[in-house]
Image (cartoon, rainbow, N blue to C red; front, top):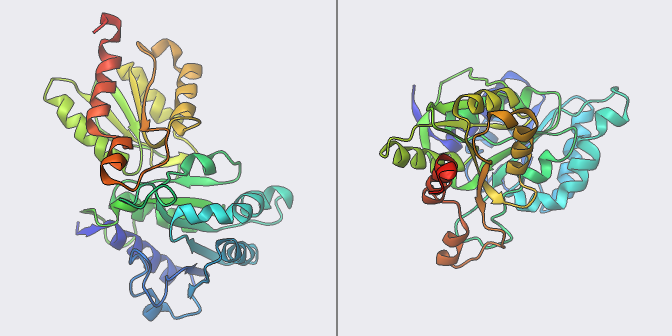
Length: 329
C-alpha cells in the first residue's frame, strides 16, 4: 500500500466520494481557492468546480445552517470548520437542527451531513484554539462522533461518514495532518462504531483515540521493555461506542487505563469508566485510571503548554498503578 500523509488520505476520501456521488459537496472557510487551511482540499476546486467546492464567509453558524438545509433536500454536504474551536459558534445549527431533524420530523426528514475539521492541540495556539471538544458533541442524541488516529482510518471513516444518512462529527487531530502511514488506494470504507485493537497484550488495557493513540503506542513500547504487555484499543468511533470491544479486552486483562487529550471533568473517559463499573465490575482487579489533559486552559508558552499535555510517561505511570495497586507499590 502507498504511504501518504493524513491530509492526503482525507483528500482522497473527499475526491473519491465527490466522484462517486454528485450530491456530495464541500463548503467552508478557504476550502476552495486556498485549498484549505491545512491543504486537505488541495486540487478539489480545479477538479469539481466552484459549485461543489464552496468558499464560505467567516460565519460558522451561517454556513452550518446552509449545509443543514442542503442536506434536508437531498444533498450530502461536507462542512469544514477551520478549527473545531470555531464550531462552538455553530452549535445551534449542529445540535438544535442537524441532530434533531429526523426526530422532530417524525422520521420524514433526514440530515446526511458531515461536519469536519481540526480538533485538539494545535501547537502554541493558546487556549482558544487548542481545545478537544469531542465530549461536547458525544453528549447529544442524534450525532455520530468519529475521531480516527491513522491515515488509513481517516480515509475509511470519512468515506463512511459521507455515505451515512445521519449527521456526523468528524474530528481530525490538528497535529496529525502531516503524519504518514499506509493507506489502501481506491475503495476503502470502514464501519462506523467499530474499535480497532492495534496492539495485543495480557496485563492491562489502554483505551484511547485520535492523536493520543501515538502517545499510548509509545507508552506500550516502554512498558514492553519491562515485560508488561498491553492491549491498545483505538476506539476510532466515540459515538456509537464499541462497548463489546471494550468489554472483551477488559475481560482478558482486568485492568484499564483510558487516555484522552481533553479535560478530566465530564470527559469521555468518565463515560467509559461508568460503562465498566456497570458491565464489567467483577472483571476489574483495580479501579479504572484516567490520563487526561490537565484541567486548565491551555497556555501559549511552550513550556507551560507541554506541562498540561498527556505524555507517554504519564500513561506508563497509570498502567503501573493499576498493575501494582494491590501490592501497595
